[in-house]
Amino acid sequence: MKIKDLLLVFTEVADLSLQESYDNSGLLIGSADTEVNQVLLAIDVTEAVIEEAIQKKCELIIAHHPLIFKGLKRISDGNLVERTVTAAIKNTIAIAAMHTNLDNVKSGVNGKLAAILGIKNTNMLSASNDKLKKLSVFCPLAHADQVRKAMFESGAGHIGAYDSCSFNISGTGTFRGGEQTNPFVGQIGKLHQEEEIRIETILPDYLLNKVIKNMLEAHPYEEVAYDIYPLENKHNAIGSGLIGELDSPVEEVEFLKFIQQKLGTPVLKHTAFTGKKVQRIAICGGSGAFLLHKAKAAGADVFVTADLKYHDFFEADGKLLVVDAGHFETEQFTKELMAEMIQKKIPNFAALISEVDTNAVRYFRN
Image 1: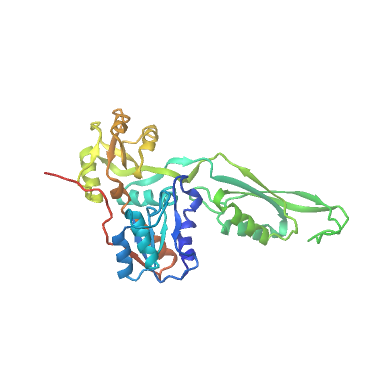
Image 2: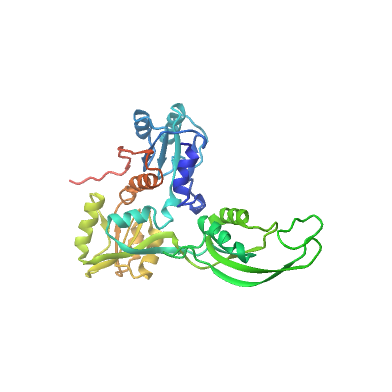
């Protein structure tokens, strides 16, 4: 299988356009047209992970964190990143990353973390409000079904758990073809009236080109009339963090013990207990301090994330329990998530989960 086809498993769910501006997701080392037989899935790429890929005969490593994050001025042996890049190139191992694009979809990193922690009925903690478009197209009545089908199969028409969503209005279209035209209906040089239907549907903006391309191919007209509108509606499957509920309320200390057991974090940092039972839980795997105010506003009893600074804990202000459960620990299940995504789409492809512990943080307890 070519690398570009394997990466589609992820980008069809979490398009690269969804990554943050500072990120570097996608194929970082190697050619997209390279054929690969096995992939190694990791959180980070280190020299030890490269060696593991060599031993397991994996031609590609897909990691959550990009190996090349900041700009590289040289590829030598000056630091860990340079040495790892050199090792990958020497051993013809391609490297890709699925980072904040996979963070920013509901079924991604946080969706997996929510499942591990038993958090149900989830919604985006901070839903995006600039990722949706409305597409309207006019076509003859007899061809409306095939045009709608082409748009729906390209990813348009999803609203929450519903698909194939559209609104349809019948009316009369008029046009007159010039000398160089080849009209599907009507005659050149004569004004024509045609009973048409206006089909409106909604889609994420990263699918716009794909939907339009397939819509045009399914449409019978030589020149297709269509309109694109930007929307300010929130996209409830794209954004940052998640919020949901436990099956039943639990004591704060019991929930901390549960987090510790599920994530394997030796030490949890947290704010003072509020004294209330907790049920409504907000999460953000990795660095999520920027969502603390969203968790408070959403009425969360607990916000679980990582990489909190000292002053971040003050922002809880006694309104909720804030827990720093570790960056690696809250994202560690991304390897399994990526494996599940591959197996769902390509059941017979060999997707191996890295056994190397790449967590750079260690805990000392006397």
